[in-house]
Image (cartoon, rainbow, N blue to C red; front, top):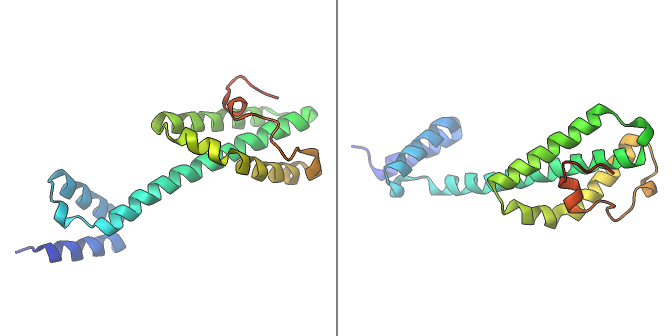
Length: 152
């Protein structure tokens, strides 16, 4: 007879050794409303990790858009289609993030200044231009960065 303790032990083992099995088992237990048998500790950790992962992806995509917009603005003679492609692609990813999770728009505004600071340093490194060529304050508004038609 399978006891609650056996189920918890098996879930912990599967979490540690076979993550997909753990997911499948957890989903099945939730569907069957066998909540007492769910590995809550690891489930909570995974849900929190999902949120962190979404936020990290947003920051990374924002930095890439900002980086390429800065290069576009400050190196007009070196503009390439790959820069335009990268701007378009990472804007699309941000828009998809906002469609999937509208509350990420608030987070976007929260991290905009910090992401700009990172993109500014990367732009200086990548272009070989002096850091002080790029303004300390973003010359781009959060709205412009997302505007599919905007290029500085």
